[in-house]
Structures are given as C-alpha cells and as structure tokens.
Image: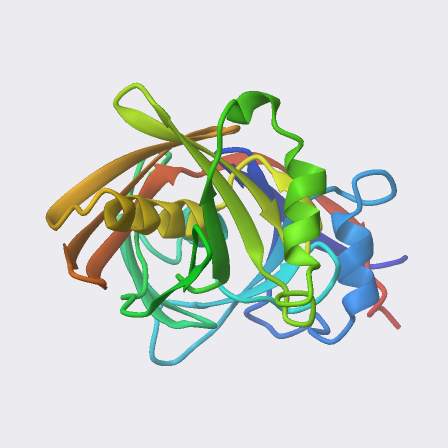
Length: 265
C-alpha cells in the first residue's frame, strides 16, 4: 500500500498555506517540483506557500517556508502566524512560543485564532522616487495609490517587480491608500507572482512607510486592512529605526488531508 503524507491547510487573512509536520525529517526539502505541485490550485492542494515544521534544539520548532513556485523563501509574516497555530494544534506549544525562521528568532502569543507575532527590527529604509524600499524579513516596495480597490495590481505590481532594478532578486510590491481611521493595502508577491489576499511582512513594511510618510514617532499601532481581513502592526519608531515590531491578526485551520508520498519505497 502506498504511504500517505499528512498535511494541514491554514489561512491568515486569506493568505493560505500547506503545513507539514517534518519533525521526523522524512520530507525532502530539495524536492521543489513536489512543493510547487502541492501549491498548485488546479492540480494540487492549492496555496500561496508551503511550510515545514521542524525540530530545533534551541527553539520550540523551526519554520521552513517555500513560495508557491517551489523555491525556499524569505520570511512570511502570515505564514509565521499560521505555523504558530499549527504548533499549538499539534500540542507542541500552548499559548506562547519562540521559534526559528530564516530571518532569525521570533516570539509569538496565540489566543483562539488571533496570533501576535514578533517581527525583526528595521533600521534601513531607502527611497525609489516616491516609493519606500525596506526589508521586514522579505524585501518590500511600498507606494501610495488612488482608487486602490479598482487598481490593476497584477499588471502594475508585476511591472515593478520585474523592472531592471528588482527583476533579478525580486521584490514584493505594496500599494496603500488611507481608509477612514486606517489604511487599505494590496500586494503583488514575488514567488507567488500574483496578488495575494494578504502579506504579513508587506503590511508591516507598509505600516513603517506610513509612519515615515506622516512623520510619526514613538509607540504606534497602525491598522491595515487587506483583501482577506484586518491586521494590526505596532512598533516603536525613532527616526528611521523600528523596534518592538509586532504583527497581529488571525490564523485559522481550514482542513487537513493526505497525499501520496513520493518517498515511499
């Protein structure tokens, strides 16, 4: 009988992920074709990315994240929140954790389906004409927009991501517009190569760009609405230095299942 690999699917504000418990180390991390096929929305499970939860002797667990194109990727904020919920549901943690990701240590607190995730400090912000360029665990380009709900984010975002400046390494492109007491953000993500319903590191980068653009300082919390829901980003800002950065939002279990294992003998 063919062996089956167990997976779970989670989503954070519409950003969806396949999660696999790889503490035994059975999953081939270099099988990028398999990862891409699992994320395929027509021929696979369908997701913006795939994460492996792995053992790490110094932390509760380690997060290894892959984009939907199968390539191992930089930090994913919504993915980070989802893997915290996954770890809680596996019984690895209860209501708090410290785990390792590609950009270093992260701490998090979880209550019901809400996860408060610590992000990296940021002290370097560049400008590309009117846009802000910064790295919040992944590289981001943030620019202001008008009539954002009707904007062609796919084509405009793809053109920026693939221009001469960013094509080689890629960049995530965020468009932001003020909305009532908060802000509305839409993001074109590299690796997915499409607009996603949410991007956690993108929302974080956008909140920092807003604080710079509006000359805000001190302890701040900025509400960001994305296509898939509501996120809250808080930090301490002094000049261009951002510390105590937190990303708060939902992380929800969707379903679980199995798929045939290519590793069975």
